[in-house]
Amino acid sequence: MKNSLRTEGFTLLEVIISLTILALMAGMVFSSLRLALNSYEKSQGRLVEEAERRVLFDHIKRQIGSLFPLQPTVSRIGGAEQAQMAGDMGARLAMSQVPLFYGDPDFVTFITVAPLILHENPGLTVVRYGLAQNNSGGHYLGSMEARYTGLESFLAMAGLPEGEPLHLKEGIQSLEFQYYGYDPQAQVYDWFTSWSGEELGSVPDAIRLTFDNEYIVVPVNAKFFGGNLRNRLRGLTGRRRQ
Image (tube, rainbow, N blue to C red; front, side, top):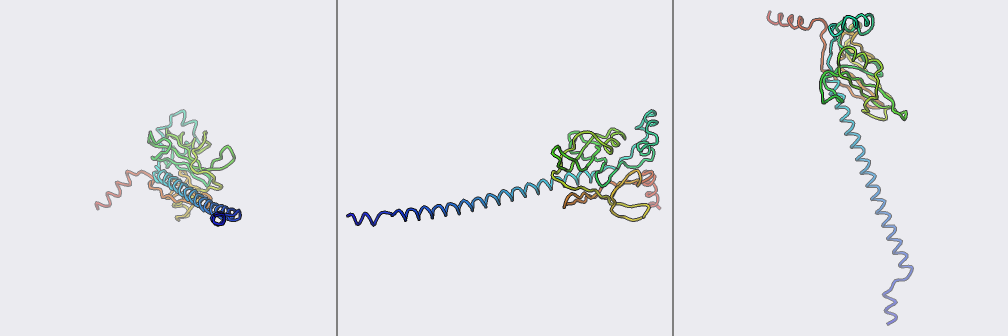
């Protein structure tokens, strides 16, 4: 009877070996589970980043694609205000009847019919994109909007506007804008580091935004015809009839 009880029990060594094997198996299961969770978190992070990237690109494409080559009129500037602005950029823009657009490598300012911040009250909106800095010293792609109320609203946004830009994309180290269009002096189409509606008399055909290792090229849907558009259309109609 005693011998049968001894054969049915476990020795201390067998118990230790069994517990060790269970611990190893539990460790392997935990490690596999941890790796799976890490992979899931990384994949979810990539999906979120890709979604944010698509939303950002769609937003920029919509705003730049809806660029409006607005020409300021002298009638928007009163006599006293016109005299005060004489000789500066505002007076030149009002008198020359060129589209409101200004861009350099660091920022771009234009008029759009597709606002983001002011979407509840759509209309002509002045938009400025540029590299901004947050409180901790980091940089981000910022956007500012203001309702277009006249030439002065564009000039204020093209200068040094007040307020904190909207955070479009964080953690940007470098940012550059380029502009594609026709250079009347060189008589070629090419990419340029700056574009002034006042100097070139038109808006660019496309805008390229490069930040870090990514870039986006957005064609501008709006076109500007210099001179009197109505007379040009009449001339085209007359030639077709002939």
